[in-house]
Image 1 (tube, helix red, strand yellow):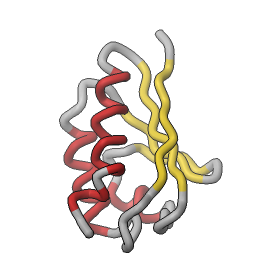
Image 2: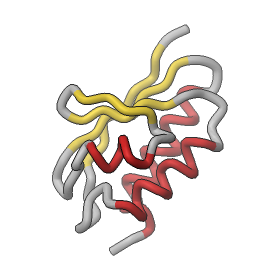
Image 3: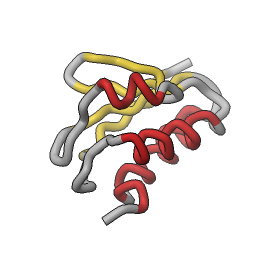
Image 4: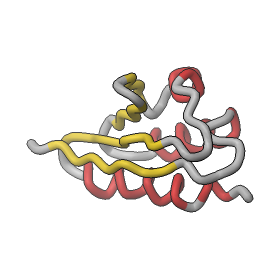
Length: 90
């Protein structure tokens, strides 16, 4: 199995704060594969709201979203789309 990963820029004003993290966790939990979010070498599971918030991803930061297995490409793309849409904010 090959890993799929995409790097995306955080573009909402408040970054990966509690509400944005909750949206990401909800979407990640609905995916058929485990997803990982990485910032500057720190990796957390995409279903951990505390882990995501501890990354401290602010506006202008890049995060990498990755997954492995059947459905990984679609799962990663779903999370990338959420981030690119600024979590429905701003």
